Image (cartoon, rainbow, N blue to C red; front, side):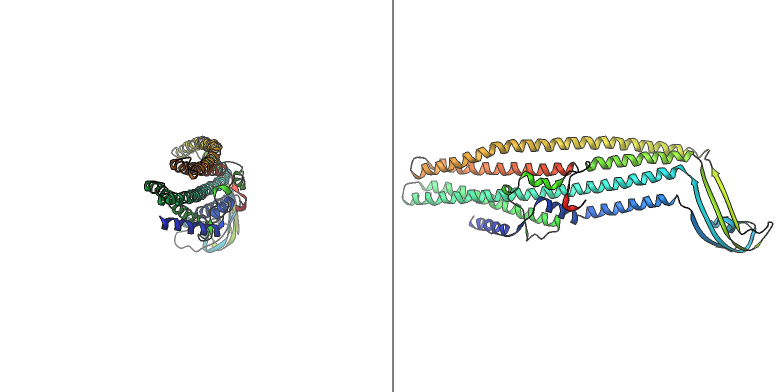
Length: 422
């Protein structure tokens, strides 16, 4: 156990020399290092590009075309050319410019609205990814805070027990106590040292995980003790506009409704225009003209119920998205309630445990004084040490639970770290 105690002492010294990191810095670093957030940013960029693609349908197109045909006249429609270059009256090589424009198509507007809604959904997805990163960072961070507090608390109990052991050994050598008492106190010291060493190892693992998540140097990173972290430290998480899960579900529902409109537009006519200008080698059966222009209207009458089925499918998808919004709100309410319960329970525990800690300190002082003056038994000292370790351990757990729940609830409700700049 001496080696374990030495390892704990060395770890405490290393921790004291490392820089303690705060909640805001942890979250900001985790967000900067997160590949999930980088992927979400790329998805947002794709959604913005989709909007620009949708806007392009409102502008005319302009193509340069040229053709040389052989054999039977007017049999080159499969080439996909337009204007005078596709005319069956031209002969020989021909070239020029062709412009096309859709003048009326209801599906364009709904498609553009759907693209904008998908951008909102992508931005909400980024917020969901950020929430998951922040929650993971908070969990690991406060695990480190908890483990450091437990390590230091049990190291303190070990130190106090060793002091009692030195007194007991003196009494045993003087023949005033049974050697059994020395073995029992030694066992209690070993148990405290073992618990401190176990928490020291857990703390090392928490720091390593935190370094991996944030991209910070493990050697220069330290979590603070619970005593140095207060509820006000969670104040670096600024309130958000809306919970990310709900914002994502609402944006996806809005996009689904716009898809219904776009599919319904398949029942309405479209109006297009085409104009071309150019030259050709020769003409047949018609007077030569160097330009052409025209308008066309197309009204769908029957397409094998395709449009009807697409509308029905889109409506079903929109209904599903509406229920997704309700489900997201229900999940949020349940999770919020769970965090509220954890917060209130931890505060109640801390209120009692603070008083119990004062009483445990007083009990240990009194038991030691009575034991040293031969007025009280050694068992009172051992029980006081055991009770002190138990109260300190439960108090550290309660405070770590409280701080994590406060932070997790804040990011769940859409909170963000100011340093992250988002």
